[in-house]
Each structure stands twice: as structure tokens, then as C-alpha cells.
Length: 129
Length: 348
Ligand SMILES: [Zn+2]
Image (tube, rainbow over all chains, first blue to last red; front, top):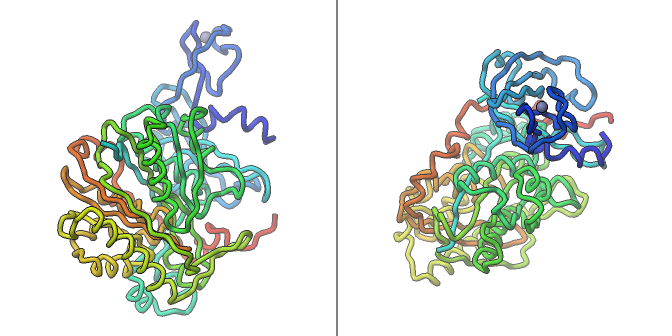
């Protein structure tokens, strides 16, 4: 990820900031310029809930380089309490600990460093609660 | 009244037992555990560092303070393991908490006392009426060289304290600092592991500064050890804080609630702050608490706090230290521990 793009996405990656359509009321995450539900262009900022439950999940056993140290690990689709779905890694547990419907909390973690000398990228992940 | 309006800690889920470290290096586990009074220590996850630990502790402090993050006008983080050599941890933490851009930020370093330094300056900012609320955090993911005595203790965790004039749960009665040039422990720029002066870290370093600061703040306030309900001293191992406390005239019962080192290890900048947080978890209105940190190099910060009625309203709003320490830890063997801590040489 190039550094300028990372900086631009900080509000959504660090604080789960989303857009709520002023016309139809639906929430877009990540935030969009045009509402995918009604085509309107007027939004108000909103913060997503930091708790939710697992909708479905999968276990990664062969990972791309920057995630290789984590295997085996789980990626889950999580429905947050405000109804928005996000996909993220579930950490601090074993893949066999996961179940559909289990409650999770969204937390702030390191995603990956850009090599040995580049910036460290942070973002959201989930833990079981 | 100026004091703490919210406090919170964070302790990673991962642990390694002293037994496993001792066996790795051919040492007798029982001798090590008896000598240091340490059973196990916390280990940061692969995706945890001083920044993520600070964010987690700060969120718990905000839950208890019940204030808007934007009301915090200053954020200070003390650590000896800031992820960047140049770029303050506080910039990332403030952004994650949503307190940018109207906030004054600085990272502090002073071996194990950087956390109380951050608290000291946060308190001073509120007292100077430059900001409404200020947050001081001590957080670390400390490393000891493989096979060194420090490897049994160097651990990970963090605690955050929000200072203000309203909604105070523990008022600051007084502060005192005691500092000298003492080369008991250091790490040069670019070196991966610290070096220490072995036995020199005891009497002329830890004890001289802890006792110096402790005696002075008691005398200055005309207080005796028996006036305090609790006392917290920096915990490089299990023995030093108990021994220092006894020499100052405190009893075991006054120190026990904060004596979390056997299960947590020495969390460096977060050591005495997290012990203090564990003490607030059980403190009652009216209790006097003495907190004395120690950082190699060397110095001690001392604080006297008086707990208010509001403690009973906020205590349950975030997880307590004892619960974080005992709730389903994930144990690592030495091999996984070495991988987690980046002690294994890998190809790029
Ligand atoms: Zn719409």
C-alpha cells in the first residue's frame, strides 16, 4: 500500500468511520462518494459499532508473505451491531475457537510494516469476547 | 481538586512460563523462580506494539472517565519500546482515539519510569490550566537478551490515566522526583538489547532512588506509612518492591494488591502504573495510595493519591487488571516465544 493512500484511509482504518446517506439512511463502509443504494451524493459521517458477531469465517493455512507468521489464522465476516458487515482477521485465538454467531470486539492492531524501514500500517481486527 | 478522572489498562493474552525460559538455557527453574519470585510473564501478540497497547489501555481509561475523546488536550506516552525511532507513538494513538488535531503530544523515554513521567506531565498540564484533560500512558513491549536474567521479566502491557479537574476519582495530593546520573542499565542507539550493571542495579540504583523518593515525599507531607491504605513500587522482579516497601515501613498487605509482577513480569514503563491501576481496582473512597516508580539511568517519581467517592461509579466500566491477568491466557513454548519476539533470523 502506498503511504499517501494509507494516510487518506486513516479515519476508516483506525476509527471505523463510515458514511450515512442523507437520502436513504444506509451506511457505506468504506465511505463512498455516491450511495450504492440510491445514488445520492449527500452523506453525514458516522462511527460504526465496535462490537458484533461472526456471520461466517474461514481458516488460512497458506498465507501471503506479510501474514505468513500468523498461520493458521481466521478471517471472518462480522456483522456489527449497527448492521454493517466487515471482513477482518480474528486474532488471539485458535481457528477452532471460532463459531458462527460468536460475539467479537473490533480492536486496533498492527497490520504489517512496509518492509524493514518503511511505515508501520495499523488497522482494525477482531477478538472473541 | 486535580487528579485522575479515568484509568485503564491492557494486558496481552500471551504468556511464557519462567520454567520454559529456564529450561531453554539450562538453568534450574525452581532456583530462578525462587530468586526472582516470578512465575510467568506477558508476551505481546505478533500484531501488538507500544502503540496498539496504548490505544487499548486508553480506550479503557475513556470508558471510565466518560468524557469525549476530543476534550483531551494533551497526550503523553512513556515507553522504552516506541515502534519508531523518529515519529511519536502519540501521533498514531491520538488518531486512533479520535483526539486529533487539537492536542499536544510528546513521547517520553526514561527506562522503566517513562510511564509515570507521562502521568507527571499530564497532571502538570491540567494544573497549569493549559488543557481541560490530559492523558498520560505507560506502555511497553520490553525485550531482554536471550539467556539474560532480564529475559525472565521483560514483558508487555500498558496503563493510561486521564487527569482533569472535574469527575476526579483519585486526587493528586503531592508529587516528588528524585534523579541522579547512575549507569545501572542502558541501551545505546541502534543496539537491539539493553545492557545492565548486574548487582549494581540493586542498592545504588533501584533502592537508592525508590527509598530516596519515598522517604522525601512522606516527610514533605508529614505522613507515615500507616497513614496509607496501599503502596506501589516499581517491580523489576518479585523481590525488590517488597523489600523496598518494608524498608520504608510498609506492610505486605499494603503492597499485595499491586504486586502483580509474579504473573505479569516487569512491564517497564507500564510496571508501576499497572500495579497502581490494579490497586485502584479495589480501592475505597478516602484511601491514600503511594506510587513510586523507578527508571534506570536513574530516577524515581513519587505520587500521593487520595481516592474519591466516584471510584465506585467507574470501576466496573472497564476490565480490571486481575481479570486481564487470569482470563484464559495463551501459553507459548520457547520456540513460539522466540518467533513472536523476532528473535529468529528470517529471510526478507
Ligand atoms: Zn442512499
